[in-house]
Length: 101
Length: 101
Image (cartoon, rainbow over all chains, first blue to last red; front, side, top):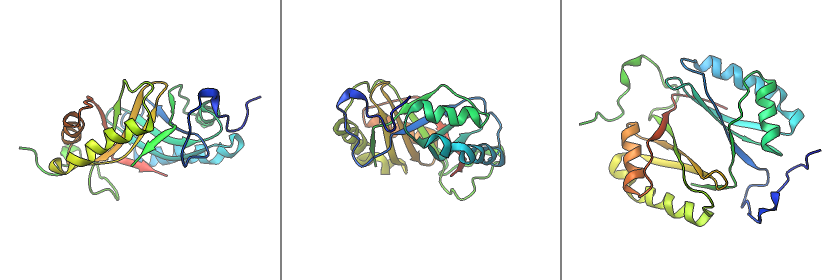
């Protein structure tokens, strides 16, 4: 069983970020529309609570077919399960312990 | 000379997004620290105005060395010039005409 919000034994600190964040990258959305992206995102939102995850925002480049999802949750695997169960699986996700603006 | 905020002849509309947005992806930041990311980002901020661009946020995955920058500007080329002049060039950038949350 996964520990919730496991902090891995790296000694890194996530300042101001209690729940791990991730960038999930999808491919294959070439020519997708805003309505299609919204529908896909709403399928995430409908089921994400079961994984303790949240897909905050999603951006689409319809020319390359890439979708970037900024998400948060207890683990990368939990976030990827949300996308899989919602019908748009990917294996590409990056944990983001550092953020600046 | 590039036209400012050129809207390419695709007929797509960018709802609620006057200035094109981009996700710029950097590689090779394996083991980078928050201070290093902040320093790199501040070099972007110091010079971006000359290109009419803005790098809004940057996220780092030090395990894979990936950095994702959410940026805006008149063109992909303008944003990539900012990164190049700031000392961290990349060729990987995706225009994001569609966003949901």
